Image 1: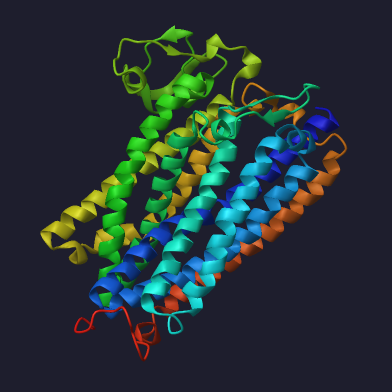
Image 2: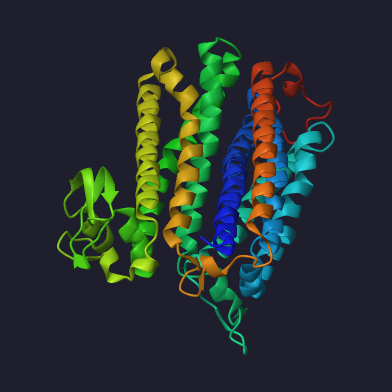
Length: 459
């Protein structure tokens, strides 16, 4: 391996580390934003102070994750210039507009009104504060939209063409760049996954309080809201995942083939529950498969063929083992979350949810499920695009910075690893402190003139 090849490999590892750490926070914030809107909306509608307490408590946690998300996210953009100069030059005209829009229309909206949400409870009218909460939630969603626009364009380029020198892509149709073939399916999947993540965070903390017999009214109210959101979002995630798979089959057939380790050029294909791809022998070892299921998911019939990896040159194959395993782990976690959620709904309907301590303990630890599923899904999508940095246009091997030696990347990778480990430890410590401290009575305090809250409904 040459120094240039090692530099690209290490830069990929470094970028994977930074984006993997960063991606812990945006889905949680997007999901929490929705839940905060519901909680505060219920307070405005009913006047019950427990909903105000919920909204204030989770707004503090939202602020913590927003700060960590910003700190870890800014670093990624610098890496485009330091480690990926060829890539930045190639996509700069396309990405410039999307990333600028993310900063102007999303980040400033979210960060600007977050101050009102955190500190304006007794300083602005309740309905004005509620509007600020809505705008913060919208800002979190808009931020995801523009980032997914940029990433989806890498997966399915559209609305751009080569410049006159044939050295980079330039925008020819801005709206086609935004609504590229994979954008709508991917953003809907990202949103539903984020809503599940936020809901399971609230479920986890609520279940913990119930098990410890602390803040029980607060915990019961939070659990009902979170369970409702999780029940809807988990099914939406399944539906949007299917739509995304159909889109991948059409525009990135090599990625779909890697998802299920389909090797034959054109044959009806099944779907594996688990297994281990044996790339050398072009088969899956130790696997259990549902025959024809992949063909049915993609084409609506078990008899139609699916394009396999042997239809493509070997150098264009994604890393099959990594893609297969991350994809199947994501699907397994997603299905488990659906089952857990609807089991909770069933016991809620039966009126025995809070007596099922074993299920409450599952909810406490299940908060890790959506985080892992989001990380695994992102990695399977990005690894599945390899060896392309921009599908069909720019190879990852050609996207790095020729002037950056491998030893420099090793030093920065070591530094990032240490700093991010400390940031993760700090985040876990601060989040645990907030959870252990719990909601306070001050969070339920009414301002002197609680305009906009219904009289006679205060608890």
